[in-house]
Image (cartoon, rainbow, N blue to C red; front, side, top):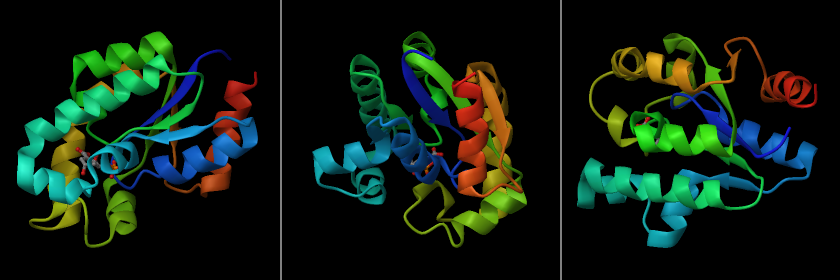
Length: 169
Ligand code: S3P
């Protein structure tokens, strides 16, 4: 398939690990928008969020999505909230294919542990936060996705297998 391979999904859905595996398999570079923002600013996401607020983080995220979209074909792992901006959705859909790594809240909660480093999870229990956030975003993930992979019972390699089979069809 032509263009980028975008991975979207909630925190804990396995986007970064899956992107790394797919990049190796396809011989493509991998971009992680959160890592790219941290590298450019020299700050962790939690630090940026704390010092500059969510709105500033979201504009940096949109800029990172636009930069990635404008580059050569790449596997791109996005932050869980990247689907909140219509412009990001348009950039993803216009520049390649989008895979939603879906998972149930209990599975996500198990994977994010105590939520350290994830500002949206720092208060209250991860599972109830994730439930609320997922209910706000589910339709957006579904609307942007060309493929949905439910990862609850899948390893990273198995998730990558599903995406590879679809991508290479
Ligand atoms: C966020 C997800 C995080 C990071 C930020 C906000 C979100 O990325 O971008 O903490 O809004 O869901 P991961 O999905 O990689 O954890």
